[in-house]
Length: 406
Ligand code: UTP
Image 1 (cartoon, rainbow, N blue to C red):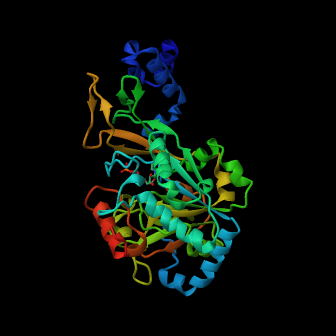
Image 2: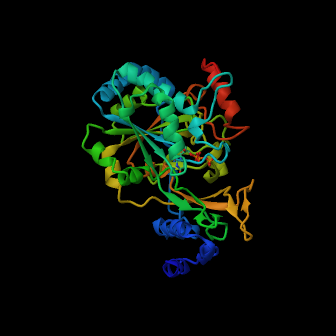
Image 3: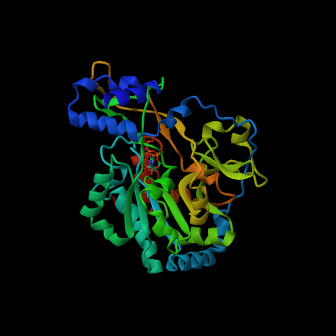
């Protein structure tokens, strides 16, 4: 077994993974062997890949403003409710992240937003969904992506809370894949003598993970046409929003994205735009000085719509993209690791590289997109950080403003 591992890892320049191998017991050796063999090592190529964006033409994209939505509200809503009743919508909660910035030792969804009572993030998301279920009088299938790391905690939290009143037959958990994290030189970090520091491979690979989990067959054979994909950490977002669904259907566009107007031009949020004619999300740090302050005819920011990670995708198009490999993004993050003396180090600053696919890349696979504006005071309360911007405190403030008792 050791010889095979050594050969495999030598070719990848990662022999140091076996540093402690001889001291491991049989079970530990088997664990390490399995980890090494399970990994798709092509992720290492992305460290040196240079993105060639020279030929890309970035342009602003039009959006459906809150005013326009309000004018056609009743029609959009009726279309959306009908589609839900016809079983055309399913939901996907992305809950596989590690929430390192929040630093909570359980899944982010278990975090208690309450002060004097228990009000977990999961309970908030499920109650938003239940409102629509009640209105449409139809259950909606909800898929929940976890990672191997938080699967048990997540599933038992749902069980302990009786699925927050949701019909358990309509809740389906699945697990996303993991990638090793490396140091800044591309050497895989270990978090114990027998284990690589593995972390979830990003939020973009959910469709192929659903495929691996065998869930797509049932979707393809059902009446489901749309999937509403959303993040775990926006505690105010509308889920299964019939107005959003109806507007996307009526627009005839291929997909939809809920956006908020940027609070100020420098806000650190990805902005929706077009790249070479396709919908695209440009990160705040990719915007040139000129683009950051560019305005449209009506005086608003040309790149002023920030994405909230709440999308509607058509199943038929996703099916066509299934064989396409998603690009991997290399991100600097905090990764606990064992040092050369075998001691576990918990860094406070980013010390390693993680390799992640991003949901925003899927948007680029679509021909066009309905950019659907929502009121950030009512629908955008992300819990990303312990304190400061997009933190527990800012989200609690917004919950209170929206009438929640904490
Ligand atoms: P973030 O990009 O905020 O990452 O995820 P994160 O892991 O939750 O938090 P940090 O960056 O470590 O602090 C946005 C959404 O994508 C999900 C998260 O659970 C969240 O809903 N996600 C992220 C996954 O489902 N899988 C991943 O591998 C990464």
